[in-house]
Length: 133
Image (cartoon, rainbow, N blue to C red):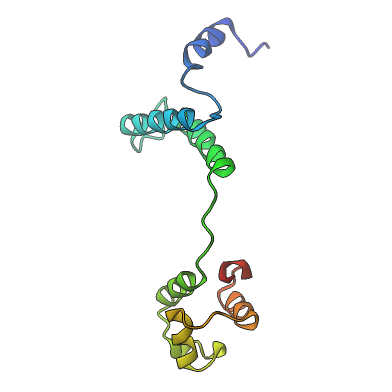
């Protein structure tokens, strides 16, 4: 059974100007705009005829992001504060880092995390040590 039909070629020739692997910011922006417009039409309807195409566009955009947009370096203190909020912790709950005063100095940026403290946080929250470096 031949999957590629003449009708498919004709349809793709018409849509190739809109659906492509972006190689620069202008093409990337074009795809993002198209995805936004499709989202307005499709909304939450997973059975919509454009839903699969939206998935493809999303992946193309994600690939461009991964390749061209650097991730910001993590902020160890912001990450620690996030975990403290998430788990409702106070400096008194982090005695493995030192006395509450030491933890407060770390949180205020007056003192940097040491390697043993980083390893302790990594184990406690079950995350890579690189989050706290």
